[in-house]
Image: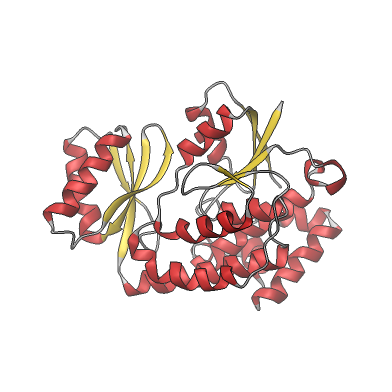
Amino acid sequence: MKKAYIFPGQGAQFTGMGLGLYQQSEKARYLFEQANHILGFEITKVMFEGTDEELKQTNVTQPAIFLHSVILAQTVEDFTPDRFDVSMVAGHSLGEFSALVAAGALSFEDGLRLVAQRASAMQKACELNPSTMAAVLGLPDETIERICLQVAAESNFKEVIIPANYNCPGQVVISGSLEGVRLAGEKLKEAGAKRVLPLQVGGAFHSPLMEPARAELAQAISTTPFSQPRCPIYQNVNAKPATDVDTIKANLIAQLTAPVRWTQSVEAMGADGATVFIECGPGKVLQGLVKKILPTAETQGVTS
């Protein structure tokens, strides 16, 4: 039996996240307090007591989900160095950083600093170019790709619009300029999409509009020490397993402007023998996606 641990991304946050961990584990309390010091504000207060609106702020959301996921992993026996019992890891978008820390490629401190820098860089990129995302339900990937390209071409590529998250069969998130997403949404509905749902996000994540953030994060990643992970990580940009440090860093940088190939990543992990997928972090979103991608897979969650 091969175990794949998977780590969620932005959108999984909720008020009270991590509070049980903080109350039950001395190690968790130490790591949470260390995070407060590194970030320069009491993220624990926002996580445990903050409003939904406060938790939606990118500079809070990303570190909060990272912390919940990584500290949970620290409490799971499978991740203890003397009995590492994990065959492979993957993370959805932000979750890729959590996966890398859990697998030993990044230290907790360096991972948190990179996530904080990523969040700040993405927020600045959002402010430079007003943009958005929308979830498209009920269409084949190829139809969505074709319509996005058509909309961009009809605007002489002044409008940015691309498939950004391949979440599962029949569920793709598009990302781009405000007008690009609007025009694509209309055509996608005409093509038979069951629904096109605007997402409450700050900007066009995983699109070329995140280029300023990609450049800023590239500098931070280039100066951060990485180690070879204890197991392969299946990365978003190509859905392939990686253990080489230079490859991991290059893919992590490219991730900000490239689509998240989650469907393909789960398929690849299944093809490589994963039969149990364990979601480590807030919520159960990834478990649901895995069941739609690999209906026969066993899914579990690690939450607190």
